[in-house]
Length: 247
Image (tube, rainbow, N blue to C red):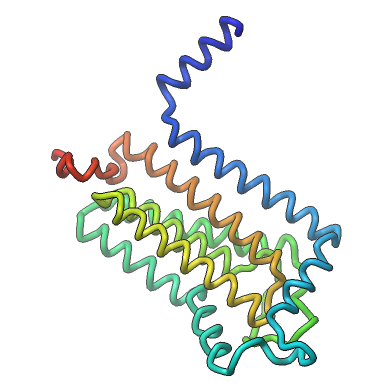
């Protein structure tokens, strides 16, 4: 090992936490995977896989009928609404209110900017790729925008995961942190699956939305850590046994 490389590794160990590197790797990996998937979609390489997966959610012999009894389709519409602009706005302002009660005004501003920025990127991406909606099966809900990436899936990932990581970082106790993050992931997954079930998105649309949204949420987590060290947002909670932060 050269002296330069040894010094570089020593600097990383002294100045960069392992968790930060892991989160950064997730961000970079998510962006790279999104780019690769978008390239495959543009070239039409995913068409056969998309069709096969989409048809798995349809009754054999009747493409107009989603699998399962009628109440499952009703539930699908209810779940897909969790990725709509109104519901996501309600959740966002509710969590902003949580931080406002804690008088974490910097976190309130950062939270609103993070969610708003991610949603703006989602809308821009849809305009950029302009992929047609699936024409293989009837749509279970009305849609008016293009297909790639799934706006509901990406906005759900951006909103729920970003809110999840920002709330979890100030909670005491690992179990509570895991619960909050697991709930955010579950909401994101349910919204994405419902879009395919209702026939309004190709599976790769949803996957792209998840990848981009998750990468954005992790980038926002890193941003919060950086800002907290400068006193701009609320610091991370200490371990449960350490008590509340001073000041």
